[in-house]
Amino acid sequence: MHSERNLRHAQRHIQALALATECAELGSRIRTIQLLTGLSASQLHRLFRHPLGGPRRGRHPDSREWYHTANLLCRIEASIVVVLFRRLAVRGIDLPLALIGAYRHYLAFCKTPPRISFDRAFDLVSHATGRWLSTAKSFSIFACPACKSEYLTGLSLAPANNHDCPFCKLLTRHARDPRIQAAYPSKTLQRDIQLFWVSACRNKSLIPMPMTNSP
Ligand SMILES: [Zn+2]
Image (cartoon, helix red, strand yellow):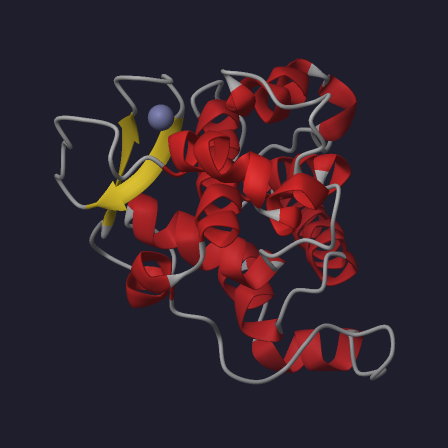
């Protein structure tokens, strides 16, 4: 009985270490890894103490105000990460793995250096779901009535038109904004631009191996 319990404990610990390593590879801060894995800060500092290979330190981003003042491309990428996370989470994938899968998918499709760090992605998802860092939701996901893309809005907002939709704005500004053209080459630009990001969500290779009893 004792040995079974010890074995289960060892398996959970190994899974937490594997998750921590994935997060560290994505540039995560210790605090983010701690919240996602349940491992202690001292354990993580011992594991990732090398400054070049280890995760970032310093202040954790807070997205509640940031999102509403961020530029158009940041708001689009923030929305993409959260929407990808939600699509994986509703399929029953463990939430830490859904976050890692969504973030890897986002990185794979970025045409320019990513504007959303893994810590930012974690913070956005925390405040969109009321988990980990947060006990209450600060964002809703709203489907634009014009282009059908889903994007982050303030909590409980349901805009009656597409005036605040970052994807509609992207399409309008594309012809005159070189930064937008670099991030979204015209051959990938389409009316339902969000599908460009979301479609490969079905590709299982982008989703980490499922784990049982993860934190
Ligand atoms: Zn739209």
